[in-house]
Length: 314
Image 1 (cartoon, rainbow, N blue to C red):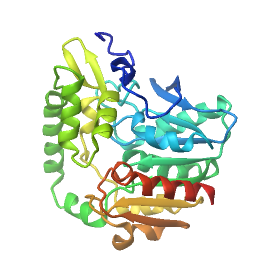
Image 2 (image 1 turned 45 degrees about the horizontal axis):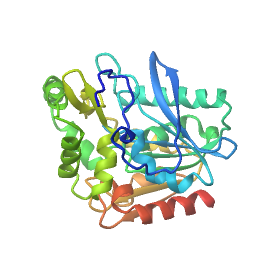
Image 3 (image 1 turned 180 degrees about the vertical axis):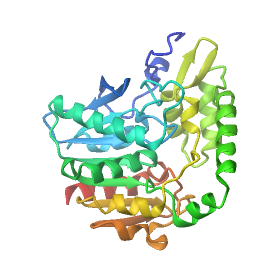
């Protein structure tokens, strides 16, 4: 098999890999901000819609296990963010937070024009969690319930450490990473199986089937070999600027729907109950998962999906 067109969607079906979800999705395109965002619609559109948003350097198919559990009750909509998965790349790397939020607002307006009923619930992981939190604050009448997995932004400690560096040092560090990242993330592999091994080696908590599924859906055949789908410039974080926790608190205070925050106890992300970030929310609660890192939805899937279903049913 050869996939020479970098815009062609590569799926594990190309390797006779069994699907996680027993039914196939519809792939659609949303034009927004000069890009085309790819998104998948799973299940019966007569059912209530729910949107799942992936994190940075990831892709929408990371939600397949969640989709399989929700599809009987929901029409599940899963976009690829700009520069990720099968969506378009921003020329030169427009991957600051405000661009993702603007894209998502346009995407939600697109769904409404396509006949999906708003308000609806949203779930986001990491970057996706930050996007849905900001969207719910800006458009509180568009969201019924919200689940954010480690998407709160910087803690006060992280922000203080970052701001202790001089502006010149922050810009120099960002420029150096930006200039190096293209060579690092444009690495090529001999084939998909090597990419599976790479995924399993980096994320050691993943089960074999999880690593295979995530890697194969992230794989693309370029003219010079196999590589990851995401734009290398999506990995340049933090930028020379960082939003202060106090500013995030003002944003989160605008959210009116119930919020469920999730965190892995083995993650690098600090506990928002302990660091004070929970105080901004009108109606939020937190679940900490033991034996789970930043990908808590993979590390503790059964507990995660049980809590998701309970929260959505309330």
